[in-house]
Length: 243
Image 1 (cartoon, rainbow, N blue to C red):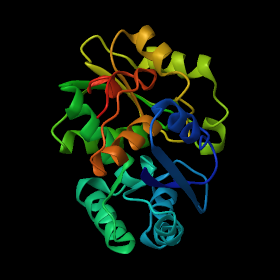
Image 2 (tube, rainbow, N blue to C red):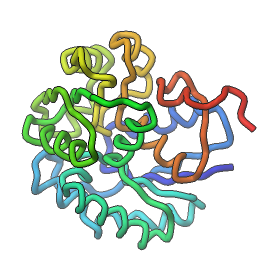
Image 3 (cartoon, rainbow, N blue to C red):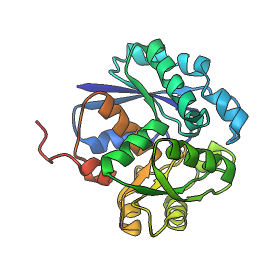
Image 4 (tube, one colour):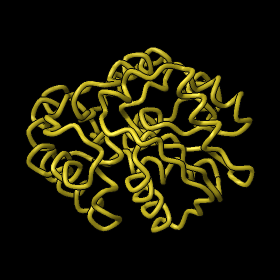
């Protein structure tokens, strides 16, 4: 059994995680602990507070008791808002507090892009344009070429969590770019676990979504690799037969 821990801000698309656990189809358990988000707003000051060390530390003990082998801060905007160096310090502090390997969804995107060998990416974000631009800057600091950025102007995670397949597919199509090797949907408040095959069929290229890459990152930290095609091209890099 591989036990993985996630600190998830508030309540929006947390039901993606039991669905992903089911689709992994192996001896993997995903434990999710909700953190207090404070003000629900895609705004720099609110995001900095959401990702503060004190808010993350509050959920760590429950994850330790669950037997988690690694922990991921399952929030993109609440990590990239700190910038490249600040986001590194955020996960270092989380690792020290938890006594476990740690990462965040922002770094999960970077590692997943590299895993796919994608050189250029397009961002299709639920966020306001200024917050989407922060994610673009974070990726550029990681050495990734961003060819287009589209924000949707949504302020709250609560609203994002109400989106269904039609809204997700429309945003992805409008945010795609012909030069992009992959399209990124960076909000963990967005339900995407059920839509990955449709996304990649529509785009005819890999789609990387926040909850998908967050789970993949936790598996990477635990040195586990799983082939799960229903979770997108990112999860088809390993042989079907697992040893």
